[in-house]
Length: 141
Image (cartoon, rainbow, N blue to C red; front, side, top):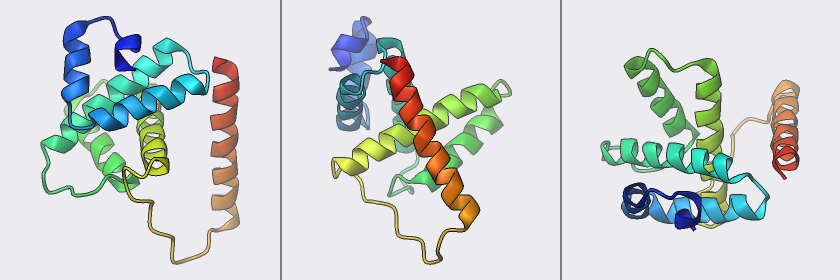
């Protein structure tokens, strides 16, 4: 599936042998079935691959979660002064899609259930994020 997205053979080889290669192929297939544009899928795969490379340099991280994503973004912010809010949001979206689809496929564990009930504001934010996810799928198709 990755070969259908990228034409650069060296890039395809890196992604197919990278630390999250099985996750990337699943993500690409799922996004294509959902009607995402090839360029959008390529961006998500590129960012997920970069995240996987970052993870492989940190053997102390034993699970992938939203907390890991926050660490990654903090590390990027400290290394690159050019991490704009727009780019940060695109990276966040790409990694969250990776987490979602990897969980659905059983490749990574589901996040632990929160011990406290969600506040009304948190529930609204979750519903809004789901709405945005659905709108994104509709606009790409």
